Image (cartoon, rainbow, N blue to C red; front, side):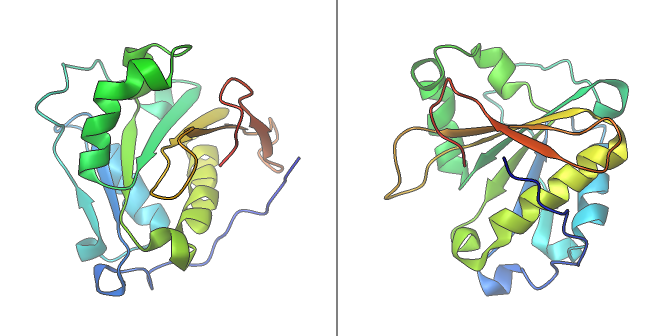
Length: 180
């Protein structure tokens, strides 16, 4: 079991010019509080973090802000085309997870090419855990889809934030058989 210390250093060195960026796609265009918290927490310049409108193919989603719930769900993708494909294949990829449950996340994170090599994904995960602690959620679920050359099995990670908010606890979802 891993218990990493949350990273508190800025990661502003990861910019589009360097080949990496984080795109946060809120499922609500009129409530950007969640996005604002991400941008502040990640300490990235405005031009490297963009709030994207919801996909037109997505149905209306009753959004629950993590401040008023106990579950924070994030779905990570490498690019928009992968996100489109995942919606079509969600029933096959996650037969044990309802499609609406999978995609009714508070935010979708699109990790652009180059971020895995740069180490951004690892730092981002730790910062997301720190954000989850800050907003008061006790559980964070992250689903990271595979990239070219990797196993076709999506990685899924359940992160339980300890009650004292001091020691994060990581546990794999055995249904997927893999942990990112």
